[in-house]
Amino acid sequence: TVIKIECVLFSFRLNFDMDLSTLVLAATGLLILYYWFRRSDTRLPPFPTRPLPIVGNLLSLSADMPALFRTWRMKFGDMFSLYMGGTHVVVLNGYDLIKEALVTNGDVCSDRPPIFFDMATGIPKKGVIFASGNYWKEQRSVILSIFRTFGVSTNLLAEKIMDERNMLAEYLAS
Image (tube, rainbow, N blue to C red; front, side, top):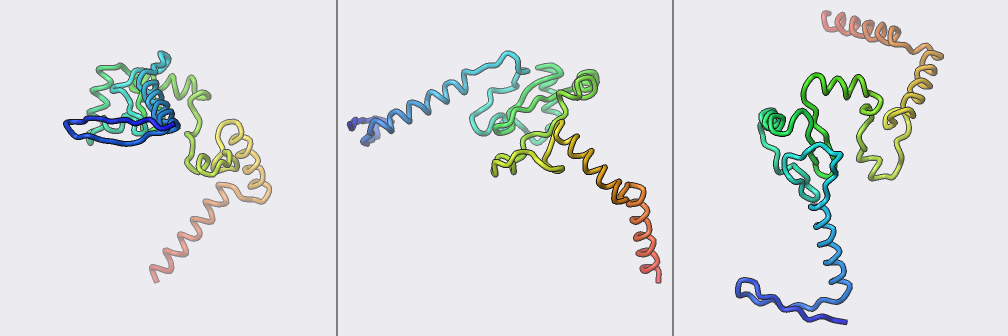
């Protein structure tokens, strides 16, 4: 079925044909936008401005970020939220709050953010470089034990670096 729609926009007449699938797609898009702007999670810290789809709060940021964050701190308290693009960021201010988050609750707050490589390739966070959390701790302990087995330690590495530095200094001096 084809629906004939005529729009009058500032005395400019638009005529176009719209089939049912296009109408359903447009209605779905409008519903998504509606729920994007209407959603409010009471568990999240407050937002300085309403985040926009795709860009989030990036348009609210200014060149003088420290002054802007101080203003938001005075207005919203020591904790507030931002959307940097599609990524939710919680901003912490004040020594006590930062200490509580990073020291007292360090296990909850210490993890790596999603890496674009993982999202683009679909490969999960594996290996020593991309891993995080308990998996990273396991990988790190295995790698350190392998390094110790083959005699690679920080002291040996530091000695080699110093030897190379001394040889370079002698070469440049001559």
